[in-house]
Image (cartoon, rainbow, N blue to C red; front, side, top):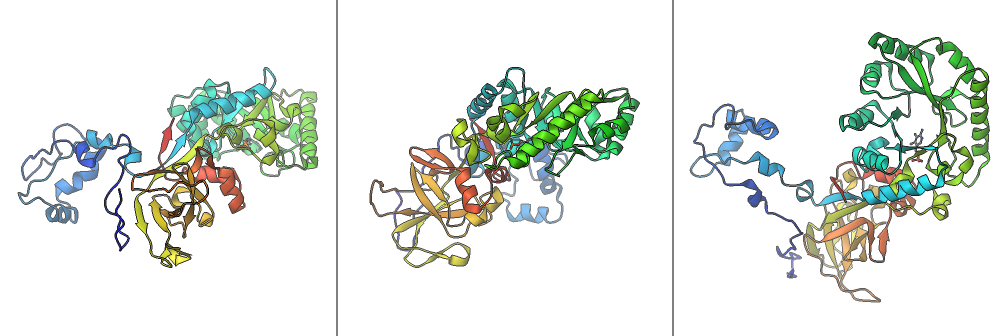
Length: 468
Ligand SMILES: *Cc1c(COP(=O)(O)O)cnc(C)c1O
């Protein structure tokens, strides 16, 4: 039990989380190898740890001073076992993490798959590290739940998947710089294409390597982001199709307003896209896999499935907007967790955090968690979000700092609230559900005037991820 001392110090009492090991238990038995360790370190390469600590044994300036200042009285340097150090998991290095529920990915992928016609392919969009959920694990899970294709934003995102031995077709949803073409060919990754300069360089490089140059043609039907204008696709194909290596695998467009209640702009884009596809076919060009729908369109409009739908946000259990909420049951995949790192009683009217714009009412305990805006907990949420402790909502208070923030635990008992006794080490939820209490990325997005996509991506900035 924490003792409340007058100065707010609550003692060192803390709950040991499950699986908590003390750092000393992980260090192994210290070994002493004499005052002069061998220049290359102990026998057997210790890899990264050895490299990182080499300066200390080599007597580099500064490092040498540190080693001398911190030497034991007998002057012999301690030896740490790098294998044991590595075994200390990320969530025991810092008490903040996101949990990714892969069963929810399975549920959401199947739920969308059920809405689309047989034979229509499903692309799992895993750009931006799977919208902050981890691209590799999410991609593999989606592929095992009925997805056929993967979509990413950048060449490096595609390479990460290939290096994790993902074999599915991968489309980059934009046209990369020409300088990246050898990477596309080497890693068998398809670009989206909309300039003839890129198409021809891509084809010539493929020819030089003796391979084909598969791509999807991006068509601009009104979003005005990327793509060949919808009424210029036949002309475009005329400029590039002489090149024998080029292989038009698919043709797609992207909707700007598939998630909005207003449907006129959406209908205009659909009409232009259908006209462009028809024009290609009339000109004798096979458009390959025709696709247009993002999550919102895949859920709302069965008649724009074409040959494939591109599922992004919905796979992660988030709705593209309120419009799809009554239409499909999606389960949130990400939750955000932390453990309390400090608990104190703050005398009435004392401030908390930078700026001190929150003042203690005296009847609360102030708890700190190691999550800040550098972890995606946006500073604009200061004083406008809650955390869940033991199933009860508590208000976040004071300005959110870069790496930490505080919340208050009301010590008065009223209504159905139990009196909470927060201790260092207690787990809290910043996003997620516990009992009847739930805090969603949508709540945060609404507070901030942004979209859940941005919040999800932000929570991947620094926190480790745990897959469950
Ligand atoms: C990101 C993206 C998607 C996925 O959109 P969601 O709204 O997340 O489903 C689909 N297509 C393209 C071209 C994209 O850039």
